[in-house]
Length: 404
Ligand code: PMP
Image (cartoon, rainbow, N blue to C red; front, top):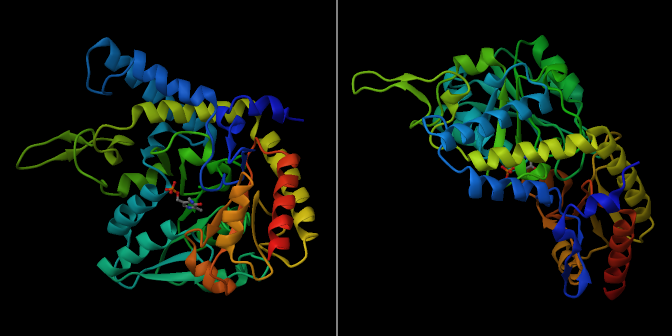
């Protein structure tokens, strides 16, 4: 069992009040709070190591480079990639998927080719493909889902044809909490010789991820959702694919030799990392990954599972409660509406009670259309949330509902 109260001491922000009420932070799907060690890693690096990485002969530059490359190794271990060549640092999930649309698109997709996504994708796994579609004439195919929020695998199988070039789906839905059967999704795609990109933005903080076991061709995530800093993220890709893809942006770091006649590119992973990287951010991301690893991903998953089960039970007692997403495999995200109370009103009034939830379409408007609603209230739990906080949420919702 985790000592959650001890863990909470690592997160100074959890001790603050809002509107004179203790903060109940249930917006972890949007971003997580940072433990002291992550912030200290950034402060320490800026105060005592800071220098640009990779090209410097001097002491500080070499030390900063060592930290940055050690962070890459920490990420490799965390997701169990085969090689550090497969770990590309980006600004986050969104940039990783845009890189894919741009570079995988250029290497492997032509007019009329197809990418399969699902109806529950975040906009950042829809719009980059739509932009590519506008540029090149590719097409999106969409996996439907059941009313419980599970992807229809039979329909998925029928989407494949000789024009299918990529499958790109979320591991965990940021609205429904559904844990998609990505292993099976990948197995089916591979039977058609189609590679798979997994959007791990909502799985990386909650589940143990092993890219080799999944056999994922690409896996992307953001540091800030896993207790790390904003502005850094990862694109994992199998070397055989990355080797064949052109660079994303041009600039420093990604070149081998530049002349006006002919420029050659750096090897992996640097080919995809133009410009000065956020080397302080990568150190802090590694610190965050070490932090959750020390607690144990299995322990975190078990705690969050228990919390989610408890919350679902308690929320279901509230008259007029409608929960969206009742998949058998569900992560710690709960979207709901109560009676005809507008999600924005519910969110605003909960905020006054010190309870931070998210309201709206959660960057998943096609999913809202599928559900026939405009938005939901979303409570999403992290490793530091407690049953008392679930009770505060339930009491808060009950109080707000009585006002209407
Ligand atoms: N995909 C999913 C499933 C997400 O939940 C999010 C963040 N809400 C993103 C992608 C985008 O992540 P970021 O804004 O960190 O790039």
